[in-house]
Length: 113
Length: 113
Image 1 (cartoon, one colour):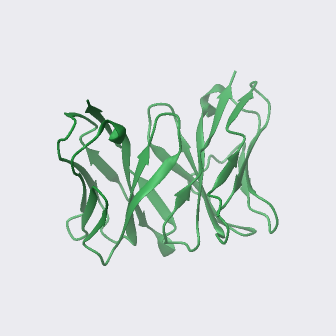
Image 2 (cartoon, chains in turn green, blue):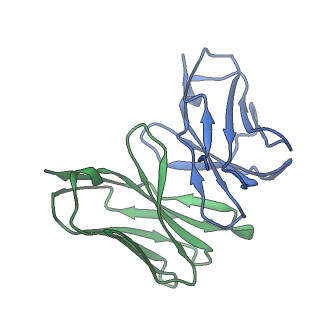
């Protein structure tokens, strides 16, 4: 059974700081890994998708890496802004035909002005 | 190209009533997933459907819950005889294939009074 863990559970940083969010998963037989952002009371916004054959993906100030063999992914946020404050969720695709998306509990990020 | 549309956004039901949650996937997507997010908890997989077929319902409670994705129209998650413990945010996601990028709707927040 796939299990996804995110560390830390909460993070508070001053504006402008670079930060790293961590995600680990127990079953390395994954199809892909997605990072999402969730604002309070809102839905999920897909940030980055990394296929199992890829090592990293970049979008603007975001960079996600994947080390499938060790079951780890990191989301790097450069030059953080107050608007980055949200819960960041990591999810892995695994199971039969990759149909199952398993989520971590999320990291609640607060960027202080 | 509209995203994943869920309605209603908020739903209030009295104990014992039925709740019907609707999800229209992104255009061209035939794979639909339902997730539940209990207060202060992570997203938990409930069911995965393709057009007219339930592929994986291992995350759905055996009683009172059912899901369908008919040939025409939205996917429906039905909860019969709701109880207070059903109060949660229910999210729908869609993808064009079983293991590709998943896009989420804004969710339906069910409150059972």
